[in-house]
Image (tube, rainbow, N blue to C red; front, side):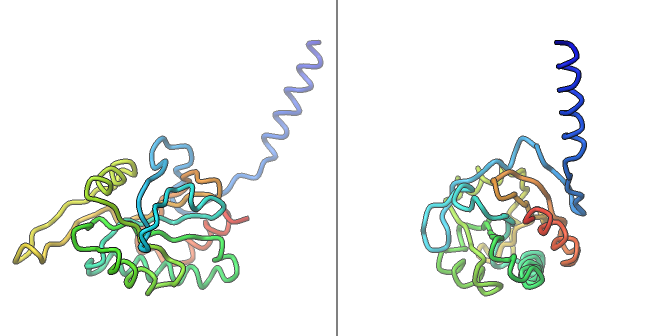
Length: 191
């Protein structure tokens, strides 16, 4: 009986060692105990959760439509990533979660987000729902007053989260690194 267990242990060890592990360029956050999900609405008003996108690799970015630099740069970079992925892009869903529910109406999100790529989706919620989602994802954001009450800005986390096809958080993408590292990592999750 001991020999049988020893053989089974050896076989299990060999199988585990032979599994192909992904080697990501971006920050591998596989197994972390946050960024587990959300419950918001898409820019068409449909309630969505992470489960809605199961079967796709999901890239989730938090921003706001009046952002002068980080947000449009990130969205443009993700549009370029989708082009580089070619036919594989159909298995990737990019989500833009507004951190400015006061100004980012569903109508505005519907114009802004798909302007970068028609497959991109804007997500919104009440201020409380956005705060809860940001907390779940450990996303920092803070309103910064402008010259008048309507011209405020928002400081916020500049990276994106990536989920595998099973809905498990896998990566944190750094801002403004170019398309190559993102394409590399997404292809690993798509294969």
